[in-house]
Length: 213
Image (cartoon, rainbow, N blue to C red; front, side, top):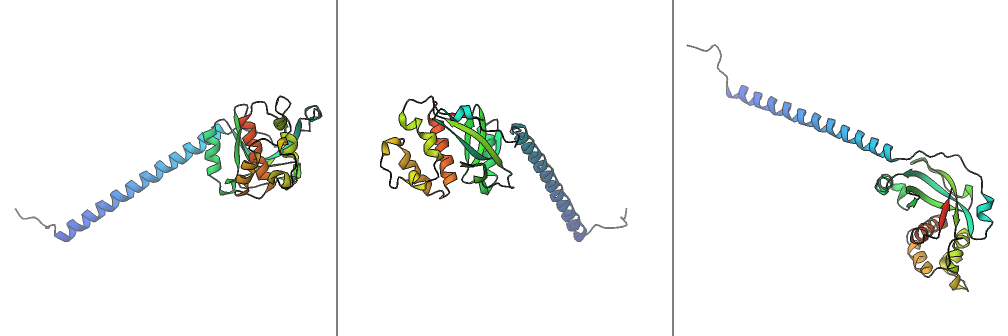
């Protein structure tokens, strides 16, 4: 029996190439679909862990600050999360948050980029968005004089107090204040950023310090 057409080498090579290309395109489409699904899942996960908060400001509570051991501050807040991992993942997603801090308050994790003494002192951001979050730092429950004085120390806008320049009564400061301030000077010269990290450090290390919104 004679075949009407004999398949040559060129046709075989062409068919093989077409098959390979089709396979590669299929794999690429599968990878793109899979990445899209993972991206959607990650976004939904972060949205589920992001706790909605209002940017509406609260009035200063005079009862909290008149005891002499409490002061009001304003954090430049970017978000609050239900877990530390979600908060740090959020921070890693923005280069502008490379000097920010994650502060745990009552089981929630707040992402702050600075802490100022006035509402207008913080530099607002659009990427990621931020707003001034007022809060009161209270040391009324502390027994150590240096810790009781901490809200007043952090309230100062005098860089000399943060750098120990010309300070006479060093016993009024926590023992590691100078060491931490010196280390923070290599991170930023912005007093609101230095204040934020000092506040976060002492608040984390001392249960007698309280933050109230």
